[in-house]
Image 1 (cartoon, helix red, strand yellow):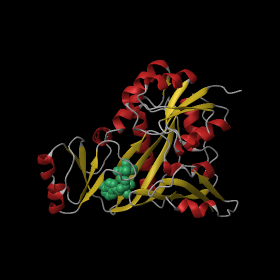
Image 2 (image 1 turned 90 degrees about the vertical axis):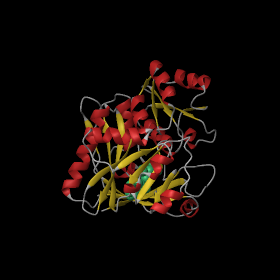
Image 3 (image 1 turned 90 degrees about the horizontal axis):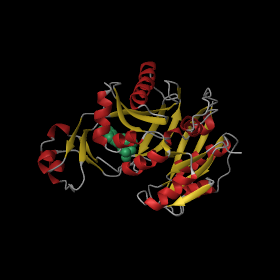
Image 4 (image 1 turned 180 degrees about the horizontal axis):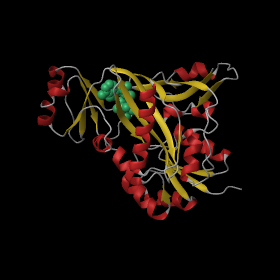
Length: 348
Ligand code: ADP
Ligand code: MG
């Protein structure tokens, strides 16, 4: 019999993988998603389809569960706050409010004495035109961006002059970094200062979308220790419960900058399903459900390849050896730049 029922907001691939991990440790799951074709419902015990501000649907969902978590950040803060008054939401809603806005997020990271890229806010054309010092730079919407959506690279004053921004939204401009590498650190915080932390993961992006990830990351020991330490500082300061990912940039001089924080399970941690005794998903569920923390150990080095758009078609028909693990997200439609599945290869 299940010990308790976990509500998951969002029914994409992360919700699916959370629900599968929950099943293995006897936790029932109910997914709330605004997409009636959400793949997560194939993996959860129950499914409620509704918008994230539909009070009736949210109440229906809340009544079915003991505790609530989420697979993505862009849930209205008001919704999480309301739910939290009835059933505990973990991580805490306020954490989401910080990371939903790139400006608040970067201000927060700097308040921990941890470096980000140089950034500034843009609210109008006057702000925009004054940002010459940030060239080459990237303009990003403060909210709702993912996989490079809402981003514009600015290479020259001419491009800064010519860009047309819709000021119904706020933006930031960030100095462009000549990247040597990108890494991420995933940890799970169980409260009372106890962590399970995975080793840094090396990430390779194409078109601003994560293409592959691998462990071990090829980085020096100082960056390895620093990146793990910063992630712990951030999680502690947020009083985060559950899995959290910190994405980093490393420049050509080996400076380490935090790029962004995801207060949730993360694409770069998919390889932990096969490379570790306990995945980022199981750790997340254990932490938010207040279960016993178990020592997380690496079983194997690994590489993960994201299958984007049409790529999924060839992979669906391939044969795999016993150290290759193919995951199909069962999304209804294939679209360019959409993450459709992934392959993890265990390595010596
Ligand atoms: P998203 O929320 O879409 O993931 P990110 O800010 O993480 O947005 O940007 C996506 C990717 O674009 C990064 O992983 C990195 O490869 C590239 N990128 C973003 N900002 C910068 C920057 N300031 N300098 C260099 N590359 C960047
Ligand atoms: Mg990112």
